Length: 176
Length: 102
Image (cartoon, chains in turn blue, red):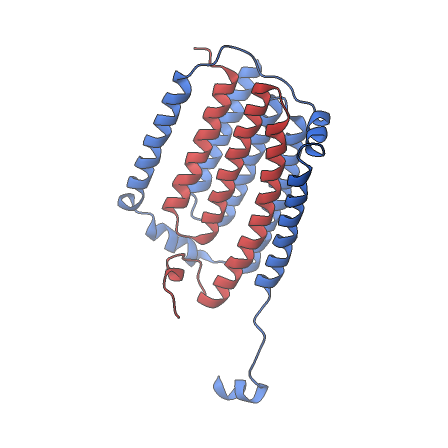
Protein backbone atom coordinates (compact mmCIF):
# COMPACT_ATOMS: atom_id res chain seq x y z
CA UNK A 1 0.00 0.00 0.00
CA UNK A 2 2.71 2.44 1.03
CA UNK A 3 4.78 1.17 -1.84
CA UNK A 4 2.00 2.04 -4.26
CA UNK A 5 1.80 5.54 -2.80
CA UNK A 6 5.52 5.95 -3.19
CA UNK A 7 5.45 4.84 -6.82
CA UNK A 8 2.60 7.19 -7.69
CA UNK A 9 4.32 10.14 -6.00
CA UNK A 10 7.62 9.28 -7.66
CA UNK A 11 5.92 9.02 -11.06
CA UNK A 12 4.29 12.42 -10.57
CA UNK A 13 7.60 13.95 -9.49
CA UNK A 14 9.46 12.64 -12.51
CA UNK A 15 6.70 13.52 -14.98
CA UNK A 16 6.30 17.05 -13.71
CA UNK A 17 10.06 17.59 -13.69
CA UNK A 18 10.15 16.45 -17.32
CA UNK A 19 7.38 18.94 -18.03
CA UNK A 20 9.43 21.66 -16.27
CA UNK A 21 12.45 21.13 -18.45
CA UNK A 22 10.52 20.90 -21.72
CA UNK A 23 8.31 23.99 -21.36
CA UNK A 24 9.04 27.10 -23.40
CA UNK A 25 7.00 29.43 -21.22
CA UNK A 26 8.68 30.09 -17.88
CA UNK A 27 5.40 30.53 -16.04
CA UNK A 28 4.18 27.04 -16.99
CA UNK A 29 7.54 25.62 -15.96
CA UNK A 30 7.30 27.25 -12.55
CA UNK A 31 3.84 25.86 -11.95
CA UNK A 32 5.00 22.37 -12.94
CA UNK A 33 7.93 22.78 -10.58
CA UNK A 34 5.53 23.45 -7.72
CA UNK A 35 3.82 20.12 -8.55
CA UNK A 36 7.18 18.38 -8.57
CA UNK A 37 8.15 19.82 -5.19
CA UNK A 38 4.83 18.75 -3.70
CA UNK A 39 5.33 15.21 -4.98
CA UNK A 40 8.79 15.16 -3.42
CA UNK A 41 7.22 16.34 -0.16
CA UNK A 42 4.89 13.30 -0.29
CA UNK A 43 7.91 11.06 -0.80
CA UNK A 44 9.66 12.66 2.18
CA UNK A 45 6.60 12.01 4.29
CA UNK A 46 6.57 8.36 3.21
CA UNK A 47 10.20 8.08 4.29
CA UNK A 48 9.35 8.96 7.87
CA UNK A 49 10.32 12.63 7.80
CA UNK A 50 7.05 14.58 8.23
CA UNK A 51 8.80 17.72 9.49
CA UNK A 52 11.01 17.80 6.42
CA UNK A 53 7.92 17.35 4.22
CA UNK A 54 6.34 20.39 5.88
CA UNK A 55 9.54 22.40 5.41
CA UNK A 56 9.65 21.37 1.76
CA UNK A 57 6.13 22.66 1.19
CA UNK A 58 6.64 25.87 3.18
CA UNK A 59 10.11 26.90 2.06
CA UNK A 60 10.49 25.40 -1.42
CA UNK A 61 6.95 25.33 -2.82
CA UNK A 62 5.98 28.38 -0.79
CA UNK A 63 8.74 30.92 -0.39
CA UNK A 64 11.19 30.14 -3.18
CA UNK A 65 8.55 29.55 -5.85
CA UNK A 66 6.68 32.73 -4.91
CA UNK A 67 9.95 34.63 -5.17
CA UNK A 68 10.60 33.21 -8.65
CA UNK A 69 7.04 33.81 -9.85
CA UNK A 70 7.02 37.43 -8.70
CA UNK A 71 10.42 37.94 -10.27
CA UNK A 72 9.21 36.60 -13.63
CA UNK A 73 6.10 38.77 -13.42
CA UNK A 74 8.32 41.78 -12.66
CA UNK A 75 10.52 41.17 -15.70
CA UNK A 76 7.37 40.92 -17.84
CA UNK A 77 8.75 38.63 -20.53
CA UNK A 78 6.60 38.34 -23.59
CA UNK A 79 5.90 35.82 -26.30
CA UNK A 80 9.09 36.60 -28.20
CA UNK A 81 11.17 35.09 -25.41
CA UNK A 82 9.30 31.79 -25.68
CA UNK A 83 9.66 31.87 -29.47
CA UNK A 84 13.40 32.41 -29.14
CA UNK A 85 13.73 29.50 -26.75
CA UNK A 86 11.75 27.29 -29.15
CA UNK A 87 14.11 28.29 -31.92
CA UNK A 88 17.11 27.23 -29.86
CA UNK A 89 15.82 23.85 -28.78
CA UNK A 90 16.53 21.83 -31.91
CA UNK A 91 17.16 18.05 -31.61
CA UNK A 92 20.76 18.20 -32.77
CA UNK A 93 21.47 20.68 -29.98
CA UNK A 94 19.99 18.80 -27.07
CA UNK A 95 20.38 15.14 -28.07
CA UNK A 96 24.04 14.75 -27.17
CA UNK A 97 24.14 16.14 -23.60
CA UNK A 98 20.92 14.27 -22.88
CA UNK A 99 22.50 11.03 -24.12
CA UNK A 100 25.52 11.57 -21.88
CA UNK A 101 23.32 12.21 -18.89
CA UNK A 102 21.23 9.10 -19.62
CA UNK A 103 24.38 6.97 -19.76
CA UNK A 104 25.39 8.38 -16.38
CA UNK A 105 21.95 7.59 -15.02
CA UNK A 106 22.16 4.02 -16.33
CA UNK A 107 25.47 3.60 -14.57
CA UNK A 108 24.03 4.91 -11.34
CA UNK A 109 21.02 2.58 -11.60
CA UNK A 110 23.31 -0.40 -12.23
CA UNK A 111 25.46 0.41 -9.22
CA UNK A 112 22.53 0.94 -6.90
CA UNK A 113 20.81 -2.27 -7.97
CA UNK A 114 23.98 -4.32 -7.76
CA UNK A 115 25.11 -3.36 -4.27
CA UNK A 116 22.08 -4.68 -2.47
CA UNK A 117 21.85 -3.97 1.23
CA UNK A 118 20.44 -6.59 3.61
CA UNK A 119 16.76 -5.88 3.90
CA UNK A 120 16.10 -3.55 6.78
CA UNK A 121 13.08 -1.36 6.27
CA UNK A 122 13.15 2.36 6.62
CA UNK A 123 13.20 3.84 10.11
CA UNK A 124 11.28 6.87 11.27
CA UNK A 125 13.31 9.77 12.64
CA UNK A 126 11.38 12.12 14.90
CA UNK A 127 11.68 15.90 14.60
CA UNK A 128 12.79 15.87 18.23
CA UNK A 129 15.91 13.92 17.38
CA UNK A 130 16.57 16.28 14.48
CA UNK A 131 16.30 19.26 16.80
CA UNK A 132 18.61 17.71 19.37
CA UNK A 133 21.17 16.95 16.66
CA UNK A 134 20.75 20.42 15.17
CA UNK A 135 21.47 22.27 18.39
CA UNK A 136 23.93 19.73 19.78
CA UNK A 137 26.78 18.57 17.55
CA UNK A 138 25.73 20.75 14.59
CA UNK A 139 25.48 24.09 16.39
CA UNK A 140 28.48 25.53 14.55
CA UNK A 141 26.95 24.63 11.18
CA UNK A 142 23.68 26.28 12.23
CA UNK A 143 25.54 29.50 13.01
CA UNK A 144 27.36 29.28 9.68
CA UNK A 145 24.00 28.86 7.91
CA UNK A 146 22.78 32.01 9.64
CA UNK A 147 25.82 33.85 8.33
CA UNK A 148 25.14 32.47 4.83
CA UNK A 149 21.57 33.78 4.94
CA UNK A 150 22.86 37.17 6.11
CA UNK A 151 25.31 37.23 3.22
CA UNK A 152 22.45 36.31 0.89
CA UNK A 153 20.35 39.21 2.13
CA UNK A 154 23.17 41.72 1.84
CA UNK A 155 24.22 40.40 -1.57
CA UNK A 156 20.69 40.46 -2.97
CA UNK A 157 20.20 44.03 -1.71
CA UNK A 158 23.48 45.19 -3.16
CA UNK A 159 23.05 43.50 -6.54
CA UNK A 160 19.39 44.31 -6.92
CA UNK A 161 19.87 48.05 -6.58
CA UNK A 162 19.28 50.10 -9.70
CA UNK A 163 22.18 52.07 -11.06
CA UNK A 164 22.16 55.67 -9.89
CA UNK A 165 21.83 58.39 -12.45
CA UNK A 166 25.08 60.28 -12.94
CA UNK A 167 24.02 62.68 -15.67
CA UNK A 168 22.33 65.97 -15.07
CA UNK A 169 18.74 66.27 -16.21
CA UNK A 170 19.65 68.77 -18.94
CA UNK A 171 22.40 66.57 -20.40
CA UNK A 172 20.12 63.55 -20.33
CA UNK A 173 17.49 65.40 -22.33
CA UNK A 174 20.13 66.47 -24.84
CA UNK A 175 21.41 62.97 -25.22
CA UNK A 176 18.04 61.44 -26.00
CA UNK B 1 9.99 -7.47 -8.33
CA UNK B 2 10.25 -6.04 -4.83
CA UNK B 3 12.61 -3.09 -4.57
CA UNK B 4 14.06 -2.09 -1.24
CA UNK B 5 12.62 1.29 -0.14
CA UNK B 6 16.04 2.86 0.20
CA UNK B 7 16.93 1.74 -3.31
CA UNK B 8 13.69 3.18 -4.70
CA UNK B 9 14.23 6.52 -2.96
CA UNK B 10 17.82 6.76 -4.14
CA UNK B 11 16.73 5.95 -7.70
CA UNK B 12 14.11 8.69 -7.59
CA UNK B 13 16.70 11.17 -6.30
CA UNK B 14 19.07 10.11 -9.07
CA UNK B 15 16.45 10.50 -11.79
CA UNK B 16 15.47 13.97 -10.55
CA UNK B 17 19.11 15.03 -10.33
CA UNK B 18 19.83 13.87 -13.86
CA UNK B 19 16.74 15.68 -15.17
CA UNK B 20 18.04 18.87 -13.59
CA UNK B 21 21.48 18.25 -15.06
CA UNK B 22 20.03 17.72 -18.56
CA UNK B 23 18.04 20.92 -18.21
CA UNK B 24 21.02 23.00 -17.14
CA UNK B 25 23.05 21.68 -20.06
CA UNK B 26 20.32 22.09 -22.67
CA UNK B 27 18.64 25.35 -21.72
CA UNK B 28 20.08 28.76 -22.43
CA UNK B 29 17.46 30.91 -20.75
CA UNK B 30 19.17 31.91 -17.54
CA UNK B 31 16.06 31.63 -15.37
CA UNK B 32 15.65 28.03 -16.53
CA UNK B 33 19.23 27.36 -15.51
CA UNK B 34 18.46 28.68 -12.03
CA UNK B 35 15.39 26.41 -11.90
CA UNK B 36 17.53 23.43 -12.86
CA UNK B 37 19.90 24.16 -9.99
CA UNK B 38 16.86 24.16 -7.71
CA UNK B 39 15.77 20.76 -9.05
CA UNK B 40 19.25 19.34 -8.46
CA UNK B 41 19.46 20.72 -4.91
CA UNK B 42 16.05 19.26 -4.17
CA UNK B 43 17.14 15.85 -5.43
CA UNK B 44 20.25 15.97 -3.26
CA UNK B 45 18.13 16.80 -0.23
CA UNK B 46 15.81 13.90 -1.02
CA UNK B 47 18.81 11.56 -1.14
CA UNK B 48 19.93 12.85 2.28
CA UNK B 49 16.52 12.23 3.83
CA UNK B 50 16.29 8.72 2.33
CA UNK B 51 19.72 7.86 3.72
CA UNK B 52 18.71 9.31 7.09
CA UNK B 53 15.66 7.06 7.25
CA UNK B 54 17.73 4.08 6.14
CA UNK B 55 20.23 4.42 8.99
CA UNK B 56 17.74 5.73 11.51
CA UNK B 57 19.83 8.78 12.41
CA UNK B 58 18.96 12.47 12.30
CA UNK B 59 22.10 13.61 10.45
CA UNK B 60 20.57 13.42 6.98
CA UNK B 61 17.60 15.53 7.97
CA UNK B 62 19.93 18.13 9.50
CA UNK B 63 21.71 18.25 6.14
CA UNK B 64 18.35 18.68 4.42
CA UNK B 65 17.65 21.76 6.54
CA UNK B 66 21.05 23.19 5.58
CA UNK B 67 20.37 22.51 1.89
CA UNK B 68 17.02 24.29 2.25
CA UNK B 69 18.64 27.40 3.77
CA UNK B 70 21.36 27.36 1.13
CA UNK B 71 18.82 27.09 -1.69
CA UNK B 72 16.94 30.11 -0.34
CA UNK B 73 20.12 32.22 -0.15
CA UNK B 74 21.21 31.03 -3.59
CA UNK B 75 17.89 31.91 -5.20
CA UNK B 76 17.84 35.42 -3.77
CA UNK B 77 21.39 36.23 -4.90
CA UNK B 78 20.84 34.51 -8.25
CA UNK B 79 17.68 36.48 -8.97
CA UNK B 80 19.45 39.73 -8.12
CA UNK B 81 22.25 38.79 -10.53
CA UNK B 82 19.71 37.95 -13.26
CA UNK B 83 18.04 41.31 -12.68
CA UNK B 84 21.37 43.13 -13.14
CA UNK B 85 22.08 41.08 -16.27
CA UNK B 86 18.65 41.86 -17.70
CA UNK B 87 19.04 45.56 -17.07
CA UNK B 88 22.43 45.62 -18.76
CA UNK B 89 21.86 43.28 -21.73
CA UNK B 90 18.06 43.51 -22.16
CA UNK B 91 17.87 39.75 -22.64
CA UNK B 92 17.96 36.54 -20.61
CA UNK B 93 20.19 34.66 -23.05
CA UNK B 94 23.17 33.32 -21.14
CA UNK B 95 25.31 33.36 -24.29
CA UNK B 96 25.04 37.14 -24.40
CA UNK B 97 26.91 37.27 -21.10
CA UNK B 98 29.74 35.12 -22.44
CA UNK B 99 31.45 38.10 -24.01
CA UNK B 100 33.50 40.31 -21.71
CA UNK B 101 33.09 43.90 -22.72
CA UNK B 102 36.11 45.04 -20.76
